[in-house]
Image (cartoon, rainbow, N blue to C red; front, side, top):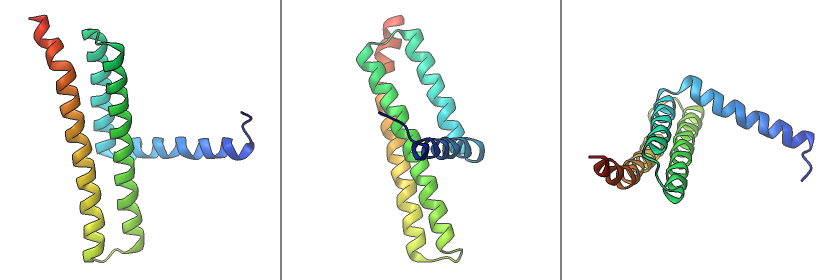
Length: 121
């Protein structure tokens, strides 16, 4: 596949979006920190290849959902700065999406890591 100048610009803008999320969004930084801890724990516990794939997928999914949540909140703020029922619904549903993703990540991590931790004892 040949990358054109347009592709390079798209990748640059995408990378800038990730950097912006990291530098301005405290929750994104928390997710990055917890993701690094999960990867370190995976290495220490020597989890299986499949478990590692599930952990990495869960990390990427969670970070992506955090970025979608931030995007929806930003677009809502762009449309209106006034309190409106529809804006509240958009933000609440977006936050709920992130809560579900984070809860799922905790469940996945627990199901993978706890048995390995128990075996250490």
